[in-house]
Image (cartoon, rainbow, N blue to C red; front, top):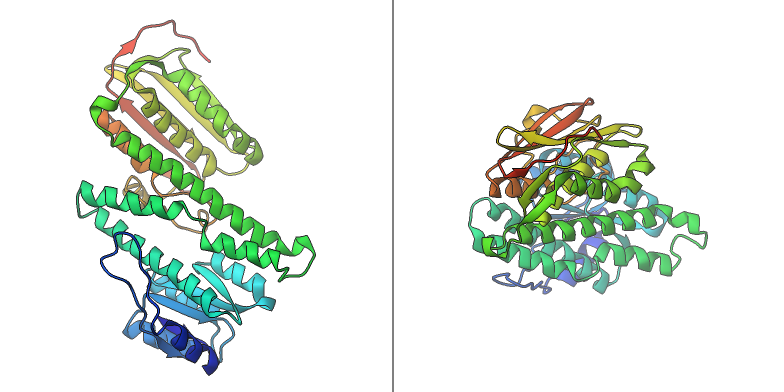
Length: 377
């Protein structure tokens, strides 16, 4: 860990508190301790990071020479694996919240107690461990995948340290007694809770589709009706963004499938089409029979993406990061789950997208269909 602060007392205090502190966690081979280095200016911090990138940077903003925000910007551009924790005074709360929006993992106010520092470092260490397991997912088999899910599920059972810190901040009235002074803190907490809820639901979907074939419950399902249910679920958010969602095609497209699988596909595609759309935009869903199965098409007039981004879109835990997506929550699992479902049925999924013009996702499933009257919706 690199501590960047021009107050020698802060650096020596961190050294004293963490020199014998270790973090334990389920599935971790051994407890993790901390080797601490110090930098008293932003320039020294960048020089150190260039030579020997640390896992964690504990960063004060008010520094001689370049400021902490400039060090954070350098890290974001060159060393994305480094986790940055901002050190801030209570008077700079707004700056700390802004820094987390710009890529800092979280913040810790000073003066901090030994327990506050240890709690923050425990949370960061767990995050580093989970990141390393995520990278292993692409290299190793099912055993590591389920080990990862077990660890992540364990983490989701406990309140987020960040949300707890925000609540304590409000409880102690650290920004005064005017509730409007806490608007940013409340918004930040709600974003994190929303992100955790999304992750939990995606993890549940992932475990469902990875269950044995014998656990599938096949029945006759009307895909058009399933799409209506997905639209109804996302409609409150669509209304909030003034996004129009329209369903086209046949009144009934009946197929023999596991209904949960089709809900996963349609819920993910339609919710993404709304989430990544512009305010006042449109989403069009078309469902119909093809020569040898069914075709589902979801088009939006949203932010779109570059071709190089579409090529990695269906990988697990991958989210397209840019100025337009930085405030949109997501787990990075949704589209990888859709791909797995489509693969289970021997189908395919294609995406056609243009930046600032929108995206079209097309799913073809070569599954048995049942004839019914054709009607335009």
